Length: 104
Image (cartoon, rainbow, N blue to C red; front, side, top):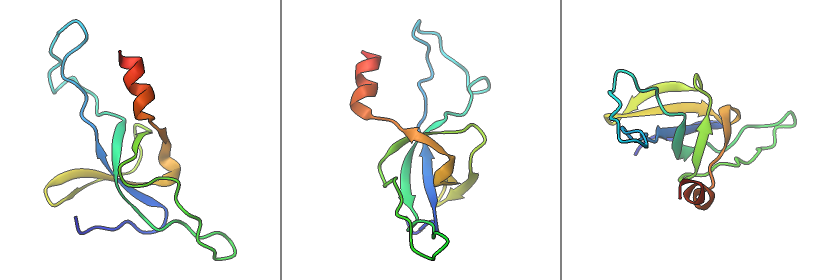
């Protein structure tokens, strides 16, 4: 992908939720809410502090994150729906092994 976020912005791809409930009921697209979980595709170099020094980003490409319902700006890049948001809009990083244990 030929896109690089600036400053403390991150490019996120939403992770699609399963279209069935635990009981096997299929949820139609018209009722589903947009997921608040995504995967970081690209990160900017980081913001600058008051003295002009670069503050490194805590996120990296490949991180699975949770973000606020109304966070960021939706964009379409190379036919793919993505979200650009500031690092501060990210609520946290989802730990994949812990998430797997909870689901089991």
